Image 1 (cartoon, rainbow, N blue to C red):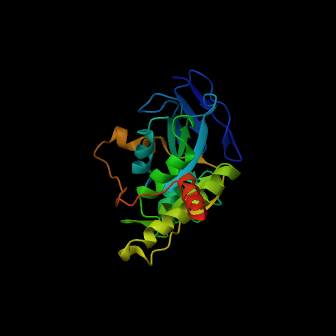
Image 2 (cartoon, helix red, strand yellow):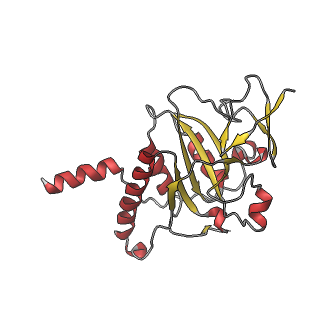
Image 3 (cartoon, helix red, strand yellow):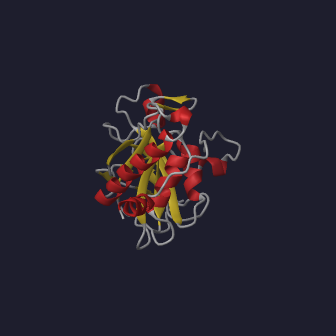
Length: 233
């Protein structure tokens, strides 16, 4: 069995050596180098043209499954991001989480097949972004709603989409007082979660999924801009 210790600098993974079955990571041990569902890479470098999105919407098990099912998604990885400590572990998040990391999914996608706006729509439509440091029955800051933009363009798109979805909530009588608490910022540091968390619901089909779609549609920022132009004209 081939293994390589995969050094991490500022949250970025060095290239995994072709043919490796597992990658050894600080604190968490070995992570399979192949995606359990697609068989695609779990570590960079990605195929040419791929982009990354990092999203947190409560427990990362169900969130990862939501995204790996989408056409145009090359790979997904669950992990920890947004906090202040290096190389966090699941046990640390469950115990104290002093670094305030969030459970996140990194989505590697082909923007020619599924764009970032479409990922944001899936994000807002499939969890409740107004719950602060919890999501449903899962309580703790690790379950908070987050969008960690990888580029300035993603940051702008995320902020616009948040405004549009807030407007949709305001149209629902029972949700008029609900304020979106999603944390949105540029954040490129990503730490892999333990191997047993990766594609958890593929390995454990009857496992817990905390996602909930209440049927509230999330407009695309592009659609919102088009509607704005129509009103002005």
